[in-house]
Structures are given as C-alpha cells and as structure tokens.
Length: 128
Image (cartoon, rainbow, N blue to C red; front, side, top):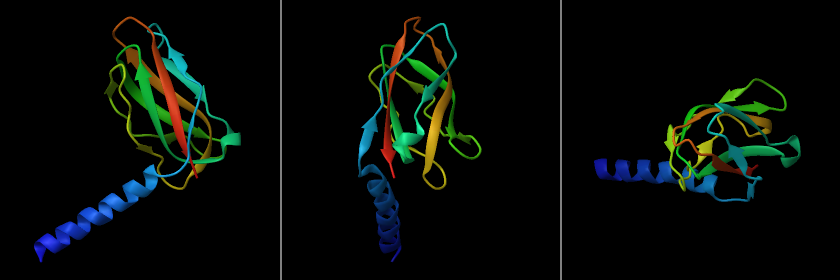
C-alpha cells in the first residue's frame, strides 16, 4: 500500500512538470553581460503575451546570479527563484513564474562574473 501511494505521488508530481515543458517556446535576442557591470534589464515585451515559464542559457563565462525579478506590465514585481551559478554552456532549467501566467515588460537581474570576460545570456520563454 505504501509503495502504491509513493507511486501515485511520483506520477502526480511528474505530470505537472511534463505539461509545463510542452508547448511553444520563443527565444529572445541574446544579451551581452559585461564583467564590469553588476545588473542588467532585459526587455521582454507585452506583445509576446502571457508567459508561464522561462529558461536562460549562459555562454562565455561563469555567472553568479544575486537576484532575478520579473516586472509585469500590470501589477507588482515578481521575484523568481534562480540558479545561484551557471558556467559557460549551462542552462537554468525550467524557471516557473509563480501564480497565474502574466504579460511581462522586463526582466531585471543582479549578477557577478568572476572570470573577467563577458558572457552572453539567451532567454527562452514559454507563452500561455
């Protein structure tokens, strides 16, 4: 009986994650992150519609993220859980936007690059 409950728990936990991964993804223009800067704002744009999830990939240097905040078109800023550090070539994996999907104006983030060379961040978003 315990193993049946465990199996059901695993299946129910996997299904929402699988459903979140499926669907159309849009890749935004890559953004250069300077080693001398510590923050950046990436325009996402209301015209893309409501967004459920996002992923980002880093190339060129190791980037440590201090914070990630989505600024919706309407409403309060949404702080996101984020990976602490991504090395060149690594992806963040799926980053869920808490609550209902929403139209996003910009993504603000605070970061640190310790390699002394610039990095490129590519953002992919999953639309509602």
